[in-house]
Length: 150
Image (tube, rainbow, N blue to C red; front, top):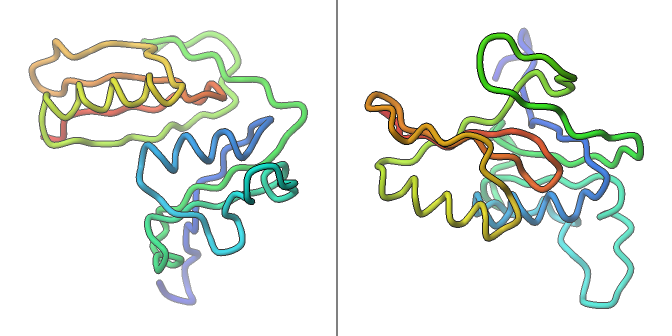
């Protein structure tokens, strides 16, 4: 990082329930909460979990630029995702996360994990010889892909 260029600290996902979405991605990616953002003990109030939370790839990864943040937005409406170049509908999030795995077996393992964690399959393109992939929606409806890295 240099002073002459900005640094992408994290990608921010709007949602109605930050703790729910943060927990989905924490489990899926193996990330850790930024200090102070951890869930409270069972039964305790969770004021941070209703507003803004940050996940990092690890406890010492504050400067990695691969963080995810979750911002409460009472007006949040899940984006409409449709496959293909002509994508009608409301595309609030004009970007999506791309996640990779090393092989087809790992891809199927992650498909099962995503569904178990509360995500859903939007597109199954595992028959593609060059780049097998799934497009998923997370619990808040944001699309993301998991594909076999070539």
